[in-house]
Length: 79
Image 1 (tube, rainbow, N blue to C red):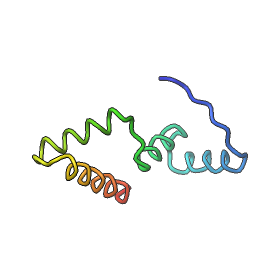
Image 2: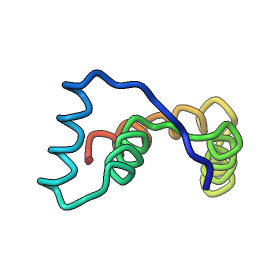
Image 3: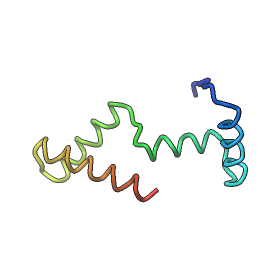
Image 4: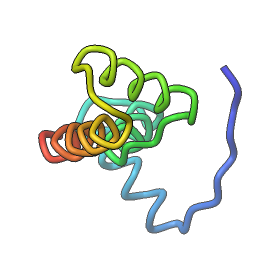
């Protein structure tokens, strides 16, 4: 897995370490969950999800996109 270096303020780094410790998760897990909750996906993954939605529902491109946005928003609210 590739590594990524980010720069955080001391305060933010401490808060992240405390959140990880109190939740029993790693910092990596917290960051991954945060990116998922924010809806960060590769373009290819987003296009794949859209194609799946369109295929399952028999929708035109505009309606499939609207449905994908609705589903993403719902998933974010549930987390």
